[in-house]
Image (cartoon, rainbow, N blue to C red; front, side, top):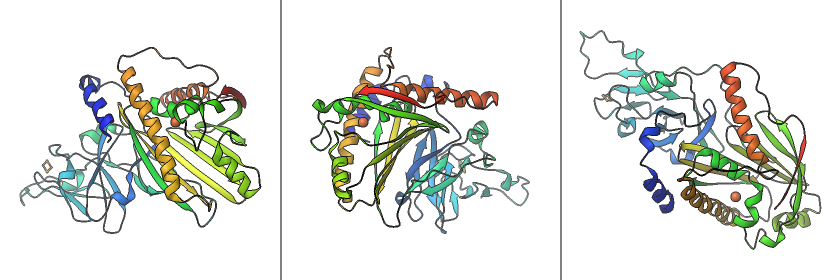
Length: 380
Ligand code: FES
Ligand SMILES: [Fe+2]
């Protein structure tokens, strides 16, 4: 965590306890990236937090990643202080052992032959876990949330869709990952991610664009399940990298950008046989902290990973610095505005979220905030 993010959080931690019972505005029953797969090696137990749930992650001898609630169902000590032998996690307090893949208790050392306690009926909290694109994804189920907190919660919801995976378009390609933490609620992180109007002010760079290149844009959007798509179009003429791509392939460039609940922005750029594909997710850690995980893959021969990472880090740092400053302002609970058309994607995000929650509550089909194709206009 960067020093600045930590300072903001420390200064702001006063009221956190009182808020604990309020709804934090998280979307449950979705996959979220918990950690990089490469961070989970050998018998190491790794901690993570998603949607204010403490998790302990590990990898079995067979190489399968698992995620348990980082809390022993006996007395609540974090299981991550315990010992993992590649199959079972042993609690550091009284040595109860849990199978890593099912979280089922397999041994309570203090029991004698007289004891009737059915050890196998005891479970630690447990979450579905899958590895994709270099991340360990955890399905944050709300079902049995109470039960999970109190111990069991090993049952999977009936319909867990496959974890997301980044689209790629050739056998050979380069891939890289970046991340950054933001001292903000996930909603602020998400609307920042798809905000078209901050580019010329926050991301002024010689290699990207200058404040003076601002001009009017018209983009067409269409509804897709759980989200919306900026229809395939030729990308902004004031961005140098796109110009370069066009010159190299000698073909047109098309970009498609999707936003999909709960937190995902996907972008695909194609020009002839060349392609670039990226995904940014904004994951709620706590109600006052979220994390952007960015993965990109491409087959453009002129773009080395090191160069891309340099640009990518600059971009993320610019966003992060802005969000740190914004958090300073948001502490005073100001009234905020969403304006047309530049903030319309943000309105759609809030609309989608509300409509999903309503559909889940009432059991009726989700009403999409976008009825048909619309054109938005803004200057950026
Ligand atoms: S607290 Fe974990 S075994 Fe007792
Ligand atoms: Fe940005």
